[in-house]
Length: 271
Image (cartoon, rainbow, N blue to C red; front, side):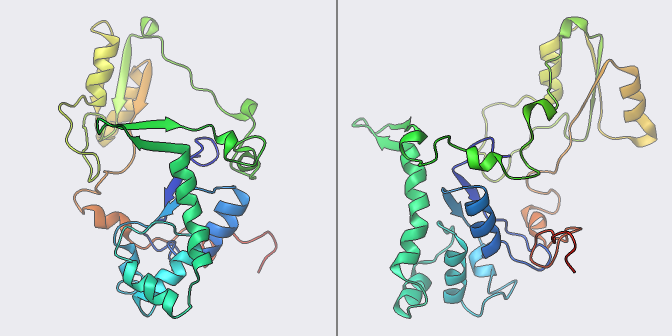
């Protein structure tokens, strides 16, 4: 998990509505779980468009001021939408205090200090990572995050992946619709060249290993190819822009099985 094992310093609140609950202002998720249980103290940003849609699409708040107030109190520290006017309005109406704002921007400052970005005299950017031990009070950075039940498992219980020895392989099955494609999403830019997974595997193992590809299991092609090969490598996942529906498709309201109306699992024995 990114926060526990990767020591992530920032994350984005989900755009989607989950069980009729909007994650952007979900107070319990951010304050009670992410901050208190997982000990996260970095930057939390909204998704682009999520702030105005709290009033437009989801009608969760009556106006922009109320949406900003709810988001700030939930733990949002960076907005990817225009927020200055409703924030000033909330401060003038005393719906928020300077202490509320200061509490949140601490996470932004911590993240920038840990991944210090400075500009040299020649204008080039330089990144110097600070030792987290000098900025975090916990004796062992990330120790509290690893204790969360059900997420961190002891090393002996984790399945270890081992590298394939190409000298011992005669055939490889590459399976999945994304096994021979390179995707460019809305944030990645345009690369100077591209190598698909299938091409990369063939280049790596060389001509002595037979590498075959099927995009799906039509007529049991994937099952048969996997059975005939020494190794099957399966590529799964969704299109980065949810083609052909586009990015809007991945922002639809969702229903998660086993979750209550607040978006979390009920305690054993709870009604």
